[in-house]
Length: 313
Ligand SMILES: Cc1ncc(COP(=O)(O)O)c(C=O)c1O
Image (cartoon, rainbow, N blue to C red):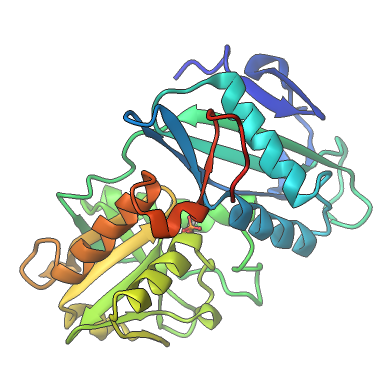
């Protein structure tokens, strides 16, 4: 993808993608000392509008991640929301997009540490289609790699360097012929997918690992939990065992990139009927309506970018 002409926000100003530079020796690149967000923009053809989903929640999580890494965002949440709307307006994408805010340690020297190292902040946006084929479902396997434990690296923060954990698990799964990996926690409970949270349905109840299972506290995860409650689907957040995956009626993943994507099989065992189950279908239909601005009850989840550039979220 040629992004050279796209507009980014870097070094405190808007500039072209290829004008924004990161030094070869920068701390963030060498030691993985950065944190980031992934935010989706959904283009609605009928409204001729690009809706940014849960922008404020993403910046709140970035704020927490940054604090954990002893970094400070150079802007308030309100300013970040406005900057992102401005960035989208300048790029004027008329398709679905992915927005990547990033704060990283920018010192160009040698020395692993966090305190006292200067930060840099940037936001980029790029066209983004489907991450998974939601209708085909995923053949998943339990990974031989365990999810990072909070005693090793903060699992709750979205830290650039920690994504080596996801990359190892995802690549192992793909090289072994699967689509996706499910990582267990250090003590053997189900944690999540390589870059998405996991949900299980059994006898009409929705289960998902609680945040103490070293999962990333997904924003889509929270939305799905809230949506399920609003639809009178019972939800239980608790530790889940591996064998519960095999006995599930439905399994699905949620995430900014993944949306709601069902798991067709896990470790060669077909889940339910091997198709998208009724609970996943119901939740994904509602979720899709929310992202496209078609559910008035959830309009506050969206920030429109082009119509008067008025910030709603
Ligand atoms: C490791 C990991 N878990 C879960 C998620 C899902 O989180 P969210 O719904 O906030 O995108 C992501 C994606 O951001 C992720 O990278």
